[in-house]
Length: 343
Image 1 (cartoon, rainbow, N blue to C red):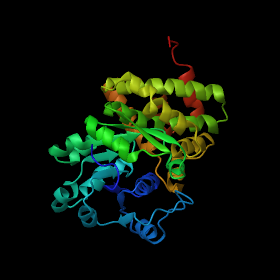
Image 2: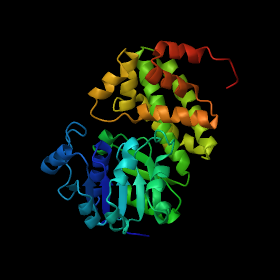
Image 3: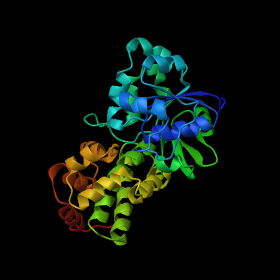
């Protein structure tokens, strides 16, 4: 087994989730270097070691390094590269690594771990599939994904949290479990990479719908129905793509769905809530400091489901609300008045 502490970990993306993981990993005795592209954000991190807007009250350990220079990250020689940039920017971020630096940056890396959640627009690819298009072929078996009910705000405060890490190599999976797990953060492992990714991505769409339900003033009956039928749609898409049905009963499926659809930390739920109250999507997006991944994922998953012939009526209605200006009230009626059928 590879050592689980004292290792070099590079984190690409200094948002809330990237910083929460940097804090966790550094406090376990690992060397952590965070790469951040935004110069103003980077300067603030270097000066204050904090981001009060995203993680209030959290000061990262002095051992965490911050850089916006790919050459500096290559010199750091990370043994694990954690990718925490918003899903729609993963391709462009990795393509921005100068070609002459790539072999040096990736030479020591044993695992590329995606912690973002989504499906890429236009291509309809899962994020691990995006990595396979960007990284050279010999690195493809080093791609893993982490998902589960894990708000950065709570992880950074040491609140007990469980996640699942998915990939192919059992030894590396066990190693990653050891690297990330501590007294408040527990990692399970899975070989169902597709299922873990689909659960993490599509639950954001259902969370938008849950926010709309709350914003409209509906009650527990509606939320119960939404989450139950929502996990059916998530499972339906995942199985069509080759995932295992049972994965969606685990942390990256129903666990992540419940947390994201009911928590006030959830940006996706917030977007849905405000739309349910009557606000416009464009106004909401321009006012938010963090990305609500479910907005773009709604479009990509809607197109993916139709291309595969997978029925996802809740996703269809969320898409119509976000992109075709159908009212949430009309969308609810469209769902309730569908042809009756067995459960």
